[in-house]
Length: 244
Ligand SMILES: [Zn+2]
Image (cartoon, rainbow, N blue to C red):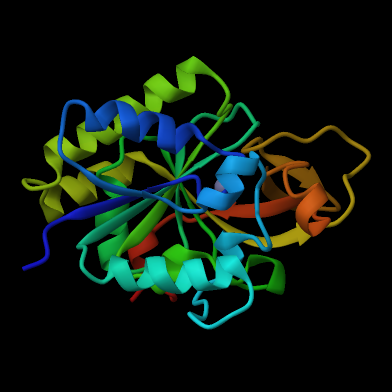
């Protein structure tokens, strides 16, 4: 039976936090991990030819490096029970889990991550299509805020070490108890222009009688010309119509 976890660092080459932390953990524990986009990491850029996290399922014969790489990583992932893809942001919003495929299994995996928030990101528009985690059996992303800081690295090291300790004994009861204490959001829309008022990640916002929580404010400006995404809170995730 598959019982191993694959960690992926630097799916985006300008987010080295995962690689830095996995190298530290590897000195103490045996873990399986890979650099998502080594060519982009070498350049210190988000991508080499394309965004790896928008290239899934990918094609082994493509001319585009990231398309070949996505297909390769998704193929390896089949040997693993869990995959955890590590990302970093410049925003100081603390770490949270991203789910791209809403299943009982991904919720179970997400509940083992010691953070207070889960963000479900369905691929409802072309700008969100092709995250590698969506094409794996049981994969999540961890988004670490303020990825340049030592504080964020220590926080991610703590989160991953705790996950490794609990992953073989975690139960359905543990999952339900943990999820009931977490805030769970779903991205449902985006805007290309910032509103006239100041908005901030996860801060409840009211514009034109619509209440929402902004996320990734100004983070996707350069790559997808998106000023921010809008989220709603999910009250009972087990009743969500997309849950498989
Ligand atoms: Zn990223």
